[in-house]
Image 1 (cartoon, rainbow, N blue to C red):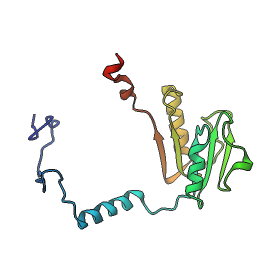
Image 2: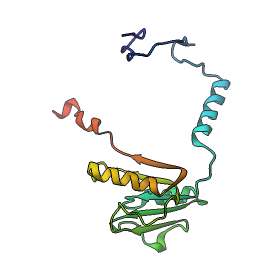
Image 3: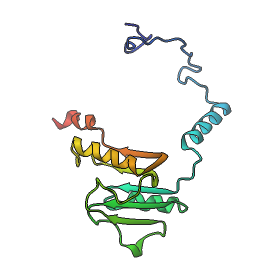
Image 4: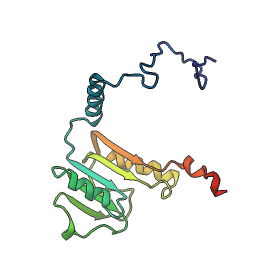
Length: 167
């Protein structure tokens, strides 16, 4: 198995074809105006320039994510859905956000391809593996072609690493 100069061996079938030399002993690319421009361009490429118009936050809980997004992006529309009504009442909301209580989260009350962006987080302890299969299918169903589904979860491996002072 091939090895890099330092560290772990490379996986079978991989090889180093070009290894840049550090410029100042600390950085692969020198801190310069050109590097600042490169980083800024990288930021804008990753951010994209598409105006996202419709969002849905599934399992929205208190609705804080949808509310913050509505305040930050007043030209977009946000819908938060959950099985429990914990979110703010209609009179307390910005005009570009609404919330819905649904009977169950697997059959979202939206047409196919309705949303540009679908968001769900912190549900790893709530769903069984079968629930996840149905949930992901449902999230992709309501997402427009070319849209974005974001699932944000805990690092379960980190939960297994107990700090030494906690033994």
